Length: 83
Image (cartoon, rainbow, N blue to C red):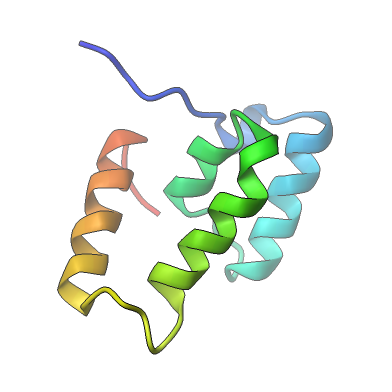
C-alpha cells in the first residue's frame, strides 16, 4: 500500500516550521491536512494553498458544500485524520 508523503507539524524544522507557524495563524491554530501534504514541497505550497483557499474557503466557491466536504474527507484520510 502506498501512502502520500507528509510532514508532521511536530517534526517540521526550518522553513517548514515557519510555514506551519503561518498556517496556524491563518487557520485558527490548526494545520489542515492539505498543508501537511504541501509542506513536502514548499515550492508548490503557495500556489496550491491559493487553490485550496479558492475552492474550499470562499463563499462563492465553484464547489458545492458537499463536494468540499468530500474533498476534505479524502485529504484528511490520506494524511491520517483530522484536522
